[in-house]
View 1 (cartoon, rainbow, N blue to C red):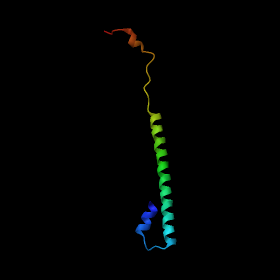
View 2 (view 1 turned 135 degrees about the vertical axis):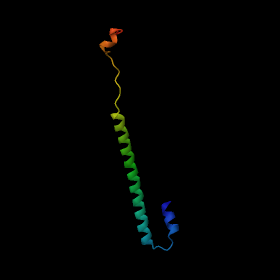
View 3 (view 1 turned 30 degrees about the vertical axis):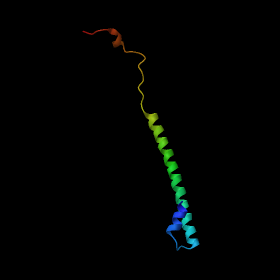
View 4 (view 1 turned 60 degrees about the vertical axis):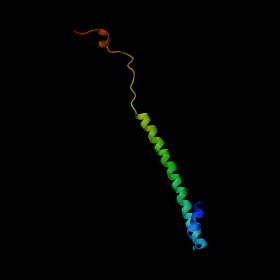
Length: 73
């Protein structure tokens, strides 16, 4: 896909120069994919860290003494 686009847009390049450009282009595409993959991993790790750091409310299993005293006048 990329190769055909480059070949159509550049007609007068020599074979060696064209090969160099295509090699560089493929290298950049591969780097871009790796960076995006790494970024997704970092996002997932951050999401998990945020989820783990959320303070959860603990249900009070033992009520305070004031709760059992009754009405205070």
